[in-house]
Every structure is written in C-alpha cells, then in structure tokens.
Image (cartoon, rainbow, N blue to C red; front, side):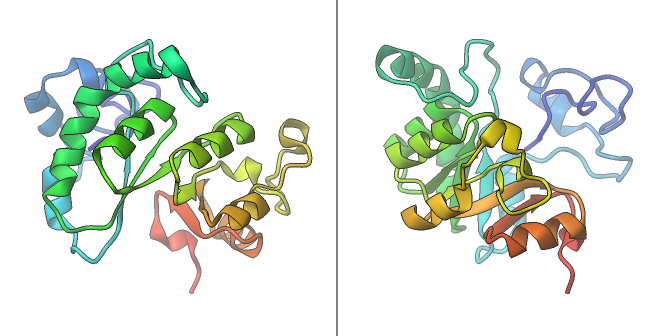
Length: 218
C-alpha cells in the first residue's frame, strides 16, 4: 500500500518520504515493506495487513495505481480491442487485490484513473467502483456510466461554484449536478485546507480526499 510511484515520494530520490528510493513496481517486496515512512518507525504495509488493522465497519477506498506498465491508458474511455488489450495487462494485478479484499469484511470502493482497472474489478467483484477524473469530465462520466459506478472522484478544479473551478478548462460543466442525477457520490481530491473543505462542501460534494482529517472543522 503506497501512493507514489517512487519510494522516496513524488520527485524521486532526496524527497524523504521513506528512507529508500526506487520505483515500487521495480523493487522487491521485502525492500518495499522494510522502507521506513517519514522517520516514524513504521514501514510500508501490505494490503492485507492494512485491512486487518482497520475496524470492519470502516469503509475503504482502494485506489488501483499503475502496476508497472508504460502501455496503460490514463484517464481515457476505451472501447473494443483497445480496452481488451488494457484489461489483459491489469487482470493479474487486480485479481490479487480483489482476492485480498474479499478476505475482509469492509465495504470496499475501488477507484482508478484507468478504465481497464475498473472494468476488471466489475468482472471479478460486486464491489463499488469510481473513476478518478483528471483532464476530462466527459470521459469520467462515460466510464462511470459504463460500470454502474457509485461515485466519481474529480479534482477540486472541476467543481463549479467554488473558487477553485477552472472554467477555462471545464466550461459550463456542472459535475456535481450531473452526479446527483445519476446517484453518484462526488469525492474530491486533494483537499489541503479547511478553507477548501468548506467551499467544496458548500458546493454539494459528498466526500473529501485528503492527507489529514483535520481539514474538516468541527
């Protein structure tokens, strides 16, 4: 369970997220799981270990990151042979993740920037899925519709009615209203302050993806 591509954190060696550097997917498991995080004395956990440490009544969002292929299509809606080819790359990785998650009682939400990852989850599991949106609202909506998603995960810049909305990129789009008509939750990333949290909640979003729980004021 690790967010960034490199064990050193975003930007690679020298940034100090762990005491080790190197791409996660090119590094032996023993090295990854012995890397100390932020000088805390804690090391990078395996998925099963993490789920075992969380009370079963707490829902878990598992984001499926690139497992180690430069061929994977990021943030795109795919069809036909292109989708089938991408699913073949994802399947061994997703199968392992789903098998581990199925061994626990948590309510699981699988999210990803990659359509094919969610497609394989939908074939393997009845768990909820959510596309993570990057550059295209239309692609995210199409993916959510295709896999009967329960949520969409946009960046703050996609949320109309906030100071963060980028109208130059997203025009007249109103993703929150669109999501409400489909019954999707809107969980926004990445929220860094209580000011952002307040504005986004006022705009009608359902969830906040943040590094710290303290971005929500009492």
